[in-house]
Length: 353
Image (cartoon, rainbow, N blue to C red; front, side, top):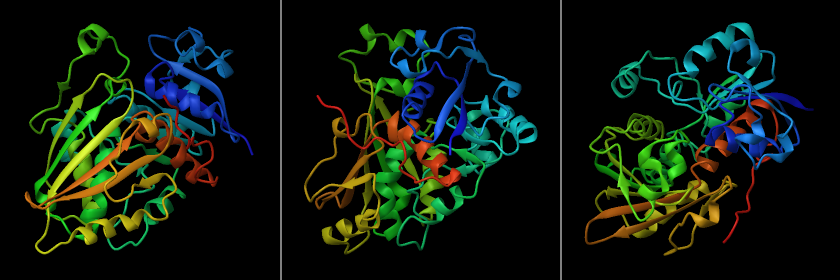
């Protein structure tokens, strides 16, 4: 079966990554791409690597243009998806809508208004199949929810990295989730494609740039929300992302105080919850996750270390922010909702050097 697909925000980084993946998907055919300032242009002029879609021209992002497709991917700036999603639900209720922005991720209106200062939109089914629910032995509940939904909210890329790193330990109850500390190295594509002086190569090269410092980053409530699902009670996280001069990739380092008498073997054992996860590589004892092997893929590398002297667990995860952090998460979740094999069209082999 072939599903017709529209991608809104097709000229941006997230939209381009989704289109790259869809260009090789055996059951999804891109028939429409839309944009705002780029409407009327050829897609190839903004995404020159997408030669398989060279005949497409960018249209205006309107509900009338998007309605009627089997699947719509929204790769729009935060604050734009809420209204479009509501109108699509009325005009085209059978369309599967996958939102890559933040508009439908949070379940708390209070947290949304605190971090985004705009009108709250109801949460959609969360697009992280690997999200572990309290009491589970494998991540099945989130997959079951995705398999019966028409509305999907793709996680934030930083959120995915932090969640994959620390949720096994939180789920196992071996760390104090009220004192988490997450520091992330993030590639510049995570800042989006919009022109800005701080994103120029002359500013970025040779420079490390923290942002969203001091509890201000918008991904914080989403991380807390996920870890509550995983079984954490009083979850608090100090979160500091740092832009590093690479195009793609996130390396998350999360530290958490260990509960009394927890052993290194117990920490390693907590990762066994990933034993059936196709796209999560649990590295061997002492091996450190790095971003290069996962660039261009839907994979993640994870591992944990025990710092005996400090009494903390150090959990690491490496992902591609545009891959597992956005594009492949969107495709993976859509596959589940459409009744397809979860891994259809998801690249598993990286590119190196």
